Amino acid sequence: MKQKKEYIDFIFEEILEKESMVALIHALEILSIKTVYVMREIKQKSDLEYEYQLPLSNGITFKKAYLFYDISLIPFFKNKNKEKDNYLILAYGGEITKNSLILEKNRGIDILINPISEKLSFDTSSANLAKENKLVIGFDLNLFRDKPYSSIKQARFIISLLVKNEIDMRFCSCARNVTDLIDPIIARSFLLNFKLNQETIQRMQMERIG
Amino acid sequence: MSPIKKKLNVIPPTQRDKKRYVLLYLSKIGSDIKNEQEIYKIIIKNFERIHGLFKSVYSNITIISFNKQEKEILIKVNKDYLDDLLTSLFFLKQQFGLVCVKSINQTIKKSKK
Image 1 (tube, rainbow over the protein chains, first blue to last red):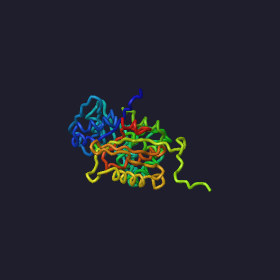
Image 2 (spheres, rainbow over the protein chains, first blue to last red):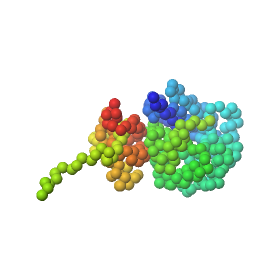
Image 3 (cartoon, each protein chain N blue to C red):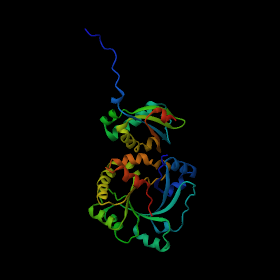
Image 4 (cartoon, each protein chain N blue to C red):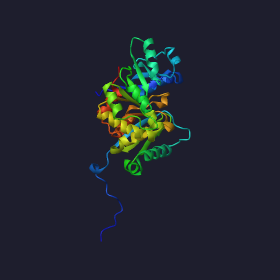
C-alpha cells in the first residue's frame, strides 16, 4: 500500500487566535500537514514576556518557533531560555545589511526567512556565509501570492544560488489564517517552475528541522 | 465521384491526448458563482494570466462537475499541463480561499469513487 506523505509547515501564532481549533486541525489534516511550527513574532522586548501555549492534537505535532525581526533581541531571549528544547530561532530577512548580519557566525539562528526586499539583497557571498554557518533559508509562499512579480524574480536568482551551493531551503505558508494555508501538492507544482527537481522539493516539504 | 464526407474519423486511442482528472476542494465559493461556467471562467482566466494563451488552449481544461454543497469541483486537464494547472491554482486564494487537491486520477470513474 502506498504510504501517505506527511508534510511540515510554518504558521503564525496569530492563526490560533483567529481561527477555531477544529477548523485549523481539519485544514491541516486534509492537507496531510503533520508537523507544524507555530511562529511567534518578536518585534520588541515585551513580546518575550509571556509564553504561548501550543494546541494539542492526536495526529499533528506542534512545535515552537520564534521569529525575530530585530536580531539584537536574540541574546536577551537566549539568556531567558538557556535550555534549547524543541524550539527554533528564525530571523526575518530583508535588505542586504540585515541579511548579512543574520548570516554571521554564532548567532544561533536556525532559519533565515525571506531574504527578499525591494531590491535584490542576496548574493554569492551571502550564499557562502549561509553554507559556512549551516543556515537554512526559508521562503514565505504567501509572499509570492501577494507580490508575485518582484518576489518570483528575486527568488529565481536566490534559489539557483542556494541550489548551486547546496544550501538547505524550506518553503512555508506562514499562514495567518486558514485560507493562507497552501496544499503541498500545489506548492510542489509551483516550485517546479524554479527548476527544482521533484525529490528536492519533496525533501524540503517533509524533512523536519531541529 | 466519391461521396461527401459528413463525419470526422475517430482519433485512435493511442493518438489521443492523455488526460488527468483533478478533484478539488475549495474552502470558499462566492455566492455569485452559480454554475460550472462561472468556475471555468475564473480558472481559465487565471491560468491564462499565469501561463499565456497557448498553454491555456493546449491544456484543454474542462469542468466535469461542480458540487456547490460539498465545495468540490472535478477538472479534466491534458496530462502534460497538469503541473501548470496546479501552479495556477496557487494564485486563486482570493477567489476560492484554501484550495486542496483531493485526488488526481486517470479516469472519471476513479475520481468519483
